[in-house]
Every structure is written in C-alpha cells, then in structure tokens.
Length: 118
Image (cartoon, rainbow, N blue to C red; front, side, top):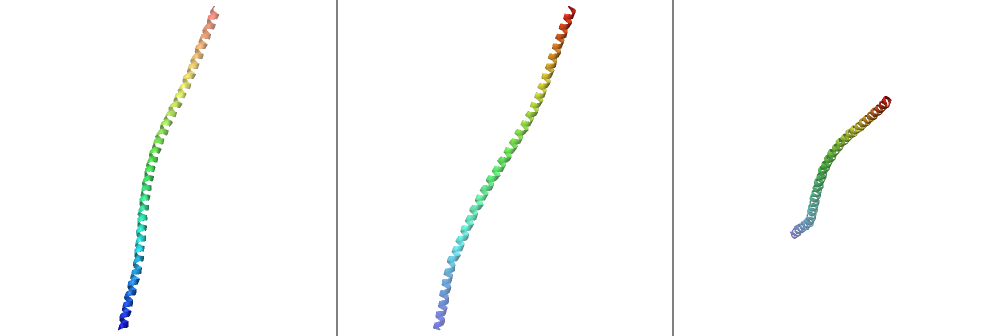
C-alpha cells in the first residue's frame, strides 16, 4: 500500500512537472504567434499605404497625360494655322510681285508708246 501511494505520488509529481514544462513552451509559442500576427498587421498597413500612394501617383499621371494630350492638340491646331498663314503669305507675295510686274510692264509699254508717238 505504501508502494502504491508512492507510485501515485510519483505519477502526480511527474505529470505536474511535465505540465509545468509544456506551459512555458505553449506560452513561447503563443508569444511567437502574437509577434508574427503583429508583424503581419504592420506589413499589411505598410502595403496598404504603399498601394494608396501608387493609386495617387497613377491618378496624377493620368492627369498629366490628359494635359499633355490637350497641349499636343493645341500645338497641332497652331501648326495647321501657321501653315495656312504661310501659304496665304506666299500667295499674297506672288500676287504682289505679279501686280508689280504687270504695272512695270504697263509703264514700260506706255513709255514706249509715248516715245513712238513723239
């Protein structure tokens, strides 16, 4: 009976010791999991902020592309008007030269006719 009592006491002490040893391991595991969850949360927040910044930059880039497209369109319009103006100027210059040539020819003809009549 005494042996049975000592054996039961031995089992109780052994189980208490083994439970005591597993408790710190569980606590360490929980602490490691808690640290990992906190790190994941921090990484998720960092990723969210980075994603928001990328979206803002993309929006700004779209605005810039739109502004560039409008400026390019205005430039194309101005270049077309400039080409028309240059063509008009060339036409005006050629018409002026033709008129001057015609006027000079008329004056020369009138002088010749006047000389012949005298």
